[in-house]
Length: 235
Image (cartoon, rainbow, N blue to C red; front, side):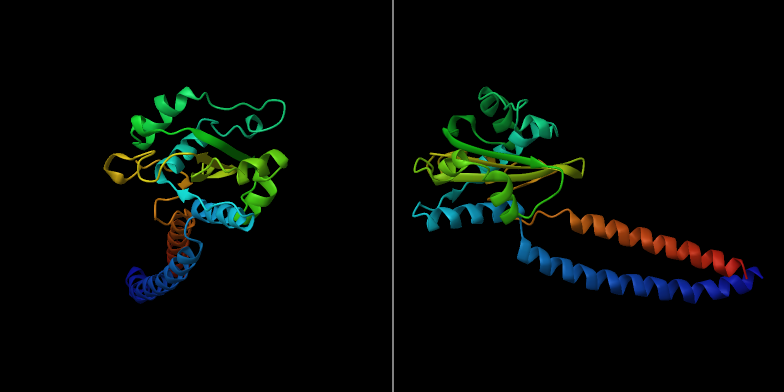
């Protein structure tokens, strides 16, 4: 009986392995294509902002990676507390944290920090795509519009992040009057890894769905093998 089971399992295992490899490759191709389109939600948010500014006859803003990384640190300062973003319990990080905490965490040279000329911050339990996050979460009143269209801005940095791999989700946009290539300068030209979360200007794809999907495929594959083994030995 054991020999018969082993004989049956071997071709079954090869078949399942080939099937898993084929579907994994196909799925990865689909995901990679999607990620080339969606790219990075923080970059998409900056694009939406600049599109709205130019439509309003305001200048397009330079996407500064260092400023964007600091925007992500700004989000992390809330420690997942959505209630602290707006309403009667609203609060914000101290300005001193930019030089003392945010800049060092990103590898931004403190001497190159420039004035923050505007901040937009939003939070909700469910994830929203950048255009919707912009129009329904960040643009909540006239003050938000005044910040968006201000002529004092020259640079922008955006960040998007969830908490513990899920909600609540935060969106943060920081504006600055700094000069391109001389403000929020990064050591080595690249921001330190500050996952989880995405920030603009890094020229990379930021999407955690690929890893989760890969993990789910692996679990499915293992479960299939176990079921197959159970069926064979149950004969």
